[in-house]
Length: 490
Image (cartoon, rainbow, N blue to C red; front, top):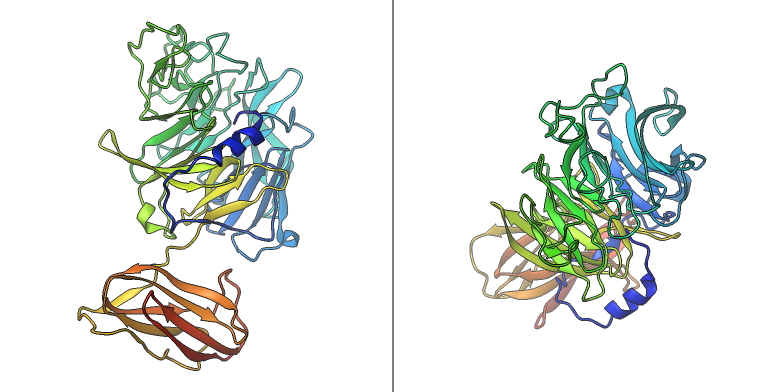
């Protein structure tokens, strides 16, 4: 994150037109809820399908992953407002990770900034024995702490990798231009990705250094905790659950933002480089031994601060599967990038949103969420691909349009709707009540010629169960329209 005159940047960006996918939209994931500057969203690895939202002011909230959830059904999972240094700028409660064995040990880990002196604290808490929606606030065990020379560039992400080790992102300590050259200094934890083993400990630490870390047992070369270095502010990073690649979005200085694939022992160039360009010195810099980003974008269009996301592995938008989704905090633009065999094979704008994107998040089904960083912040997710659930029921090509009567009818709670289209066309299939109000969009996409079926589940566009009564379903194209009546009986 960066603190800028955001409103001016956003107003400028609205005057610029960018191509994007018109079929992919952001919808409110939890319309009844608002959050105070949300900075992280995750789930617990216990199969309970709960959502946990970290607010920068020091509060973690928990609730069931239900579109219809209300504020009265949200619990305060943890409150450390008395511990944090600030909830403005880039300080505050910044990260949360659940131990992979949380279902048995109840451990969570948080990342926050504390005052006097200003420092980052990584600590462990334990779930209350009386309430699964509450952390024992007296159970804190500090794992790691280090001083912050300035109030910005605190990193913040915590991650349990597929290798079982615990990863931590740290910024370069702040100010501007990394005045102490922390990112290149391997004798400090600032400007790094750290990796430790918190399942083991020593008499003096709550963790041990993995023997495969680059400076393991080599203190003259660097601190053992360091996994990768040369980073300015890797505010958000994530690991693809399929390929195992770690994607880090490193927030730039004044000209460029970048995405890196993180490998053990690699130097990602800051403050020598900003993106691909020399920064210090401004010309003739030595790039020897530096690992270049896989993606760089400039601030020329109003973008100013990259927010790293995730490789999409959900089901709402199967066409995005395998793409790394990332955004920009200042403009709200969201892109999709595909990286294969060491190269970026595609990178395109996905959505041009009006939101201050502080973070992305995933739930236990690997669905992606977008967090709007506001005192009245909302959480968004992708709309469902309108092709999901559509089945081509045979291989014959119809000669005319046809909308069949649903079966069964009356129905409770599901019914099948079959239809035929004789040509490639854009179609909509929608459900209306007796007043003519649309209650459900089943299909809104382009389809090839064919015979199709889709199941209607008796719910509206927000997932609410519809009351008993008469409804109408209508199939519409540029040249065809037909509507039929059906009855929902409870």
